[in-house]
Image (cartoon, rainbow, N blue to C red; front, side, top):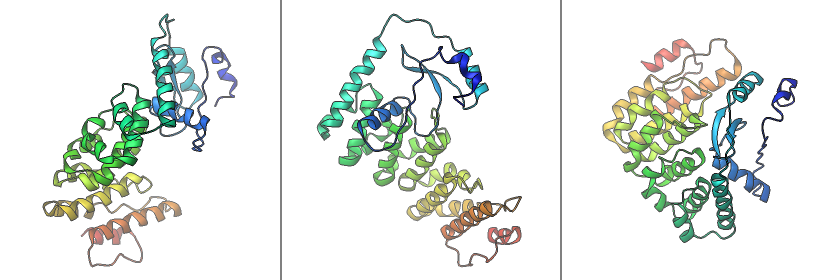
Length: 295
């Protein structure tokens, strides 16, 4: 997109910032990580416009030349005399670099309540590794922070050491993951956390995602696994879980495309194994055998 001649009119209207992560944990990679955290980026590519005076995202441009031009032409940034937001970011960057160089659990607990999302996320990462119980105890409040990288860390802790107290907050996140730049992944991780935290009430929230038939989406398989885990822990949920899984066998791909068919069969097998029925999975998965499995 960027070398397209149609974009020349925008070259001098914007300060262009290219952020690249190679996950090497080098000085440059850590700087890129902090920028990604600040703007809630966890999937790539992302293109958006930021007001430099407030450091707020003012437009999502999309990934096409036409949508990018439309976003730029529709955005009007007024000159600002105040550099307060920029100065706050600079100060936060210094705290973030200092914490990365000298991380301790005591400092992390103090920084978790800072107002800067980057500093808070770095502290959260440290606590997730060294003292996850602190995060689990505060999980409901922490899940309300509208930042994907931040919430991913909280969800990872709940997946391993959460309790039923977090279930309502997780269910709400599954029902509505907004605001998010990557709602499918956020919802998937919330569903995975419900495998440990979910109750019989969680079945109704998770079941539709297991029944979606979308065999290329990791959310579908995660929902199947979570329903199974809930049924193992809660006897009262077993009937509704079995009904949900019974109707979750995915339909046969229309065009018979080989890759789609393999993914479809893999999901069907996963569901069949989760149900734990004695009837073996058929040697050939067709609409006829699918109907028999559901019966």
